[in-house]
Length: 214
Image (cartoon, rainbow, N blue to C red; front, side, top):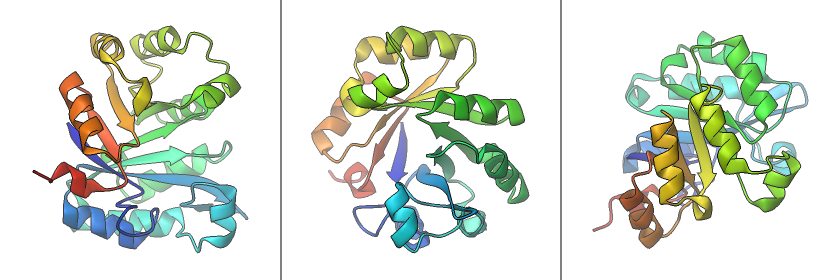
């Protein structure tokens, strides 16, 4: 099971920052997840528009240069794209910094993931499935069947699902379809244990220290 740091180690240091990535590496993670959105003509690491305006957020180039250092070579990257229209720039940046092979690009916006796959079919992609309001906006309908069909058709390689949605039939269905499932965002050791027992491929947490507690 992959230990995935949300924004790095957001419970320790403000997420989506170089310092948070360093903290996650020190604690021990297999993957670092971070948000990317376009703001004022640049690609920034920011969860929301408000964060982008006031958060002194690093640019994607600065972040990838940092994560491209040899000490991060064994850590996978999950870029979660928050805004449409920046797909080509994201793919270009991944190539420029030589991290395509250890990157997974995801979004709650199916069109964004489809565009990334069109730009570079070698990139791993994931669809993020949130709560009821988010699913309604994306008009998923019967989202479970739709997601499983998409995995079987290789439209997406992975499903990043809100942890409360994850159950045994979903985990088994995605595995049978040849995909991966990552559960987000889990900050309770008991929930981590439950999801681990179900056989999820990865768990996202704000506090990677939870993976090392006895």
